[in-house]
Length: 469
Image 1 (tube, rainbow, N blue to C red):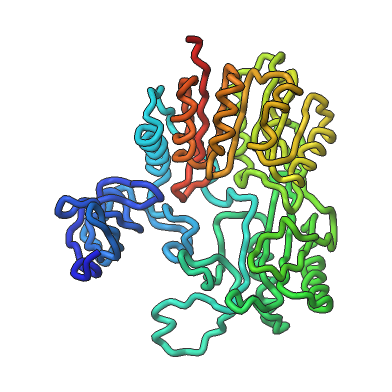
Image 2: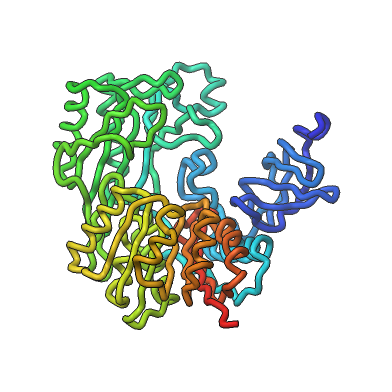
């Protein structure tokens, strides 16, 4: 972008619609202008921050007219935290644009014939809907411009979320509306305890400090798991922290910690210590129990996960005599959820610990018609696997955001299951995979599901059926 354009103020820009990643769109001098923090119907002055020959990006600096669809954000951290980018937009409009996002991605990327995209299935809870949050300890608390200009000496220790695009700056969270239960109390009281006892908060640049990360997981059954990640091995201080949590919050049913001196916060390869309670919590769905360990994946909106899985099961329309392949099965939630309506369900997942959980989940629910395999999907799903197992009547696939590896897509085309139910958290990569599957399959149903109110993210379930000719 030319120097003349950067920091230029575009005045009275009419905001027309929401685009990808939650940004909104206006037009100026024949160029698209992407603007964050606005709503369709706003008229704003925008400072240009970057752009290319065909588009620009900017941020609002003055509002001349507010959209009729605007509402007042309920969180004091809105606009800084970055976790809930759509609190200023009413929920009905959020659902409308999530449906539009799915339609746009499929028309632009998949380029196949489509049925009607059904209205977004909304979440009954639009606050306190998450069952898992990660908070970061840091000695680099983010300060506002007003705080910086005041030249006051602020305590820079913080426990909260990363500021967008600033890996080493953490916003000190007072109250988060994403997770209910004791989550806010645990975070705030642990921070106060650490400050009172002069325990060190992690320095992400220099990779030093005792307190590194706090993970809180809850279930609809009232159970709570708390994991504290320590950046150094200090048994006395660790016991001090864990004793405090155990005594102050007897509601915690699973209290664990891990010592992590690596360069990142992932701990799938590290040993966790159960300090008090059980090493897992349990979620429940239609009478089924699902055991969730500290390394287990589980959909982060429990109530809406039930709605999502019901959509997937309805699309599969099982009669009871089908063999189902559940790819990217995680802890076997979908596999066990549909097992009672299938002859056999075979689940595949690359995380070995998750597969162990999936087997346990079958066992504790008395489900005997499931098989689970751990390994890279593109390596497991090969010719030998096909020869040793019954051919699938239905394939359910729920890959990560990156979608399916092309080798996996080619294997699906090789398997030629009559139905494929594709669950995705990223309609763009889902549409990319559908473009390949279109060689043999038609899209016959599309159902967006909102798992994350106040954000631009949307889950999407599609049903593909194999063409007979």
